[in-house]
Length: 300
Length: 300
Image (cartoon, rainbow over all chains, first blue to last red; front, side, top):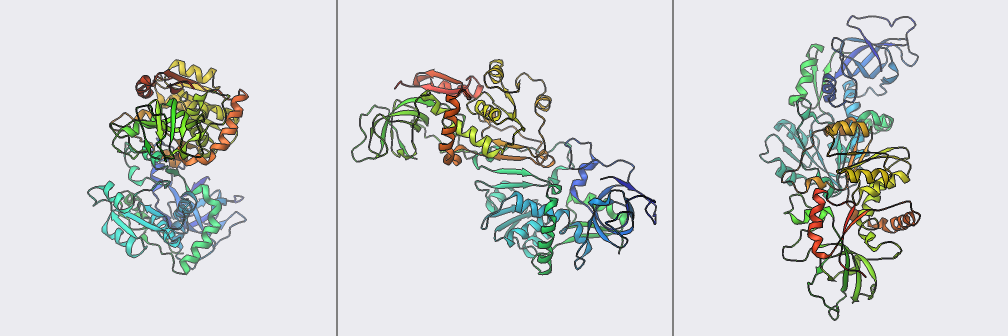
């Protein structure tokens, strides 16, 4: 994907171009963006940001003008855009047209967007869950975690979640239906807390989609107990959402129906004004957000 | 499994018992046995040894007397036995009768025993290999590793192996057919060596069946780069051989034929005399053995 972003507000795409000019409505603050701000110590999912250029990220947009046959003015889309009011997207094929508008449009940055598909693929594809199993979700009130917890319950499994404030732990219990919870910042012995709430069983599966606690560290925390992988015959698997894009259509139909039936809820933390986007993004790394962090840039 | 071991040499099984009395021919020195000598910091695969009781482990035995209908005097078997000259095995159902004797009997402690099935299951079941892929084997001249390397070549993949002495590295190249090798003890920069010989690709699979370098440490080495699991979408999976016992018959038929056809070779390090068993076992942890460590206790 290549972007030509603009800080002015053009009204038309350049003549002969197949770009799409969009008005940005919602911008998504996602932990993976932190990796794009570092020299690639570990190669991140996507290219690094270019200093001096507009930051890119997921967003919900309205097409203002289009040189591409798939899009026309007035279309609502989600996908990679710029952190600015208007963006000229030079390769618009990766944008997804928004089909259902009976839900908040911001949902396409969360439950119906990248974090939603991450939760779906991570649980249903990577974890290969069976009814009656027990699941533990860390960062459980976040953009992905809250949804994983609800997917677990819909499948008839038992789910334990941890989060870092009382408010978030209350959400887990009272809003998302987690069976057991703990505040990892207030447990004097985290190993004991985990053992009490969720004693990892033989043949467990660990789906790893992010390590938010590590992204601001110069040296990452170390893991000393890999031998457990053998004794408990555990599968630990990293994954990223782009590998599961082919599942998006079936994911969307399932989740939109669950939302309409009131079987899935979603908590967002929406700040208004593009000028608040940087602090909203930074807030992710201290856990300031409650639920999915979104920036409202403009109304339709 | 329950054992009643004896340090004397009985001639008969107790009347009315369905135990089997065996003469131990070969005893197997295996790294997992180290875990049975520690308090279970991490629960090991099997129960801890009982101080004062005879050590148990894999071995090749000849039945001297049997109270069990499946076994009769003269049968050759392999399975869990005692580190002694004769063992009374009270639950002989887990013993496997040796079908093919046109290979060295010691092979049933290695290429045709637990390490063999470990190599087979780890490569073919856990790694889900595809022709043309590249495979890296650590401890590559060991009981399991030398066989993994040869399985890889038989499948038409490219295989890199590392070992800790020049002699072992020579074996990898000249005996087992590894495509590339290095001596991990002589590389000034191990990360660079791995990157040169085997740059882990996206969607790689890591089969973990042991961590021999860690077994004598008070505090295990730490791992700092788990984030790679995500960026490269890697699956890391621990496994143990008992979970794959159901594959033993097909494994045996395949491997015995490969041995007869000269397509698989196996290097053993055989010491003679049960009194040498303890030092042979200890030698594993400094890499003194070259190939599978076996103790010859008695000839047929």
